[in-house]
Image 1: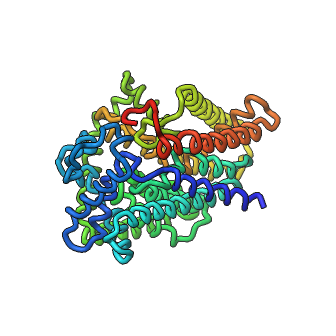
Image 2: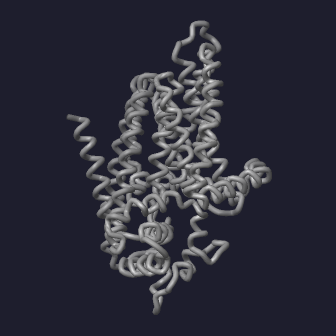
Length: 465
C-alpha cells in the first residue's frame, strides 16, 4: 500500500509540473525545439521551423520572463534574438547548440509520422517524451538504490524519495531538450555499472553500456563522463579470479566501441565531428584550467555557490530561485552532508586498519564509492574546464546524470551526521526529517512560485514581468 501511495504521489507531482510550467520557460527551449522541428519536417524545413518556433514564443509570451520585452516586429530568425545568441560565436542558432544534434534528429524522425505540420502539438509531444525519459530514469534510480540497500545497513532506499521530489530534478521532466534523455542514459549506465561491480550483472550489460556511453557522447556535453567511466570500469570489475576474463573482454568491447563509433559517424557525421572537437577542446584547455582550481578567487566562490544553488532550485530563466535564507540553509546542508561523508570514510579506514577480520562486502562497498567519486570528479572538473575556466557560470542540472552516485553519498553523509548528533536512531531521524521537509518544499514551490509567477502573474519583482 505504501509503495502505491508513493508511486501515485510521484506521478501526480510530475503531471502537475507538466501543467504548471508553460511552454518556452527555460533558456534554450527555442533552440532545441527549432532543431527538432527541422528534423521532423521532410526536406528543407529551416524557414518553417524557425517561423513556427518564433510564433509559439510570441503566443506564450516568451519575451516577458526573458525580460527583453516584446519587439514591435517579430524577428524572422531565431538568430536575430540577441538574448538567445548572447555569447555565441556564430550567427547560426544551431551552432549555439554546439552541434550535439543526435537527440534532436532522432526525436524529429520519430515525430514525422505524427503530423509534422502542427508545431504546437509536436511541442507537447516533446514534453511527454521528456516525461517518459524522466520516469524511466527515476525507475532505474529506484532499482539501483534498492540494490545498494543490501550492501549498506542504512535506509539508502529513502534516497529515491529525496531524488523524486528534488525541485530542480523534477523540473527536468518538462524540458524540450536532451536533459531528460541524458538523465535517463546516465541512470541506466550507473545501474548497469554498479551491477557489474557487484558481480550481479550478465556480460550482456557491457555492450549496453557501450551503446549508452556512445549515445551520451553524441547527444550532450553532460554525457561525456560515461565514456570516461566506461574506460575505467574494468579496474573496478577486476578480481584475482577473473582478471584474465576482464582483460579479454575489455579488448573485445573496445573494438566493438570503435566500430560503433564508425557506424555512428556514417549516420550522424555532424554529431560525431562536433563531439570529438568539443572533447579535444576540453582536453587542450585542461592543462591551464585545472591548476586554476588551486588558486581560488572571487569568481570561483561565485561559480561553486551557483552550482550548488542551481542543483536544488533555480528554474525558468535562473531568475526564479529560493529566497536567500533557504539558499543558505541548502548550502549548509551540503556542507553538513560532506562532513558526514568524510566522517564515514574516516571511520571505515580506522575499522579496516584495526580489525583483522574484514567484512567480505566491504571491498565491494569501497569499489562502488570510489567509482561514484570518480564519476562526480570527472563531471565537476569537466564542467570547470569547459565553463568555469572561461568565466561562465554552470548549472547544477549538469550533475543530474550522476544523481545515483550523488544520492548514495548524500544518504551516507546524512545518516552518519545523524549518528554523530544522536547515536541512537539519529541517522533514521535525520533522513526522515529531510524527506518530509523536501516534499513540503516542492509542494510550496509548485503552488506558491511556479503557478503564480508563470501562469497567473499580474505583477512581480522579476525583470520583464
